Amino acid sequence: MLVVLRIGGSVIASPVNTKLIDQYSALLRKLVKNVHKIMVVVGGGTLAREFIRAGDKLGLDRKEKDWIAIHVSRLHALLLSSKLTKNGAQKIPTSLENAIRIFEKEKIVIMGGLTPGMTTDSVAAKFAVKTNSRLLVKATDQNGIYNKDPRKHKNAKKLDKITYRDLTQLLEQDSHKAGIHQILDPVALNILRRTKIKTMIVNGYHPENIQKAIEGEDVGTTILE
Image 1 (cartoon, one colour):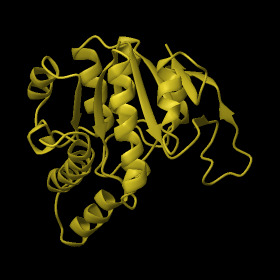
Image 2: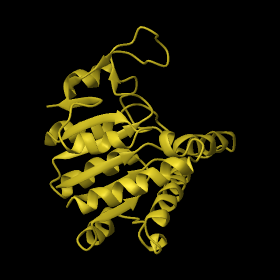
Image 3: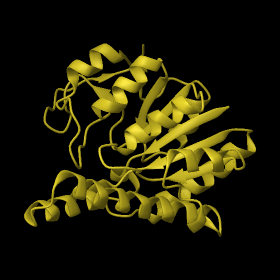
């Protein structure tokens, strides 16, 4: 089974959580032994947003700030890749085409961002489309999707299932900006909605949730067409 896994930088790198990176490395090895092929896309997290704020103060434009966030996400990807394999430094793709070429030979590919205007959510979504993956799992700092932001509202309720259409109405931002931080960025959401790829949002602090999602268990929130 081919699975695209999007790991939030807010989960493993805000600050860098070496224990959790160890756990993800072990999980990926286990999934490969179970005949899965995994594409992992890692986000930039708090550090990327700190650099973006610095860019704001320096008067940098959106493209320049995007590039900074991309390089941060690649560093986080390199940490995980290096833990997983001794030649991890050679396996951080810088283009979708490069990622697909590597994926044709390897069972696991780990990467960060690619180009300005494209978040790591969008990278994961586009890769899923290009490889005909039917499942994208996003590991976040929340237990799933809520009817309103649980960080702002104590009475927020977690949703077990939601349609792409309804999710669009819940999101606060409907266009890209450097450092955007919400459950799915609007570009990725449109890609996944159009292609009807099953997406599951899970709590990434517990890597076993990823395996449960892949095995078809009800965990987190499932986004349906």
